[in-house]
Length: 158
Ligand code: SME
Image 1 (cartoon, helix red, strand yellow):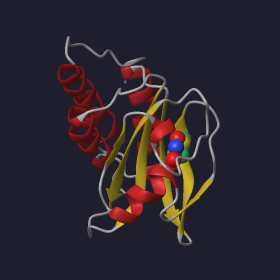
Image 2 (cartoon, protein in one colour):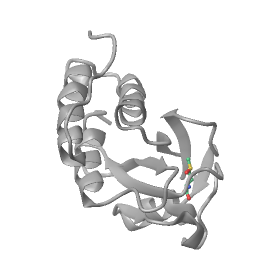
Image 3 (tube, protein in one colour):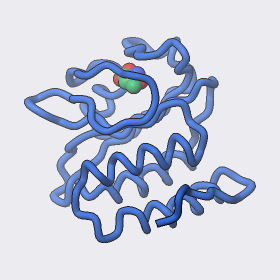
């Protein structure tokens, strides 16, 4: 494989398309979901320059920290708690422009200012985890992130 990813494009959409093609190459033929999640997190953080990218996985009735890239983070999140727990409970993606204005936000790092969390489903459609991506600027995430991160998360093969 190439030594590193090379993300090209002027717009966010183009950067995601470039990244997606490479992540598809990295995950195709790899059946281990942990390996794929680990590479997906590195691709998002280092390919797009986001502050933190990681998976929380449903285990024993709560979300438990899985593969991630970025500063250390909280390990367990209960259903309905924080952005991740609410995403899991509602079964829908949440975009938080300013985490300081989100009631119940769990601050793992004071440098994280905006956040997007998406449910990750298995082949049967059950939510088996969430993908959480953080930025150190307010208002960093939009519908392009939602659409493209959903595509990327599906490549984990959970
Ligand atoms: N902020 C998240 C917790 C996870 S960290 O951002 C890595 C939340 O409120 O659920």
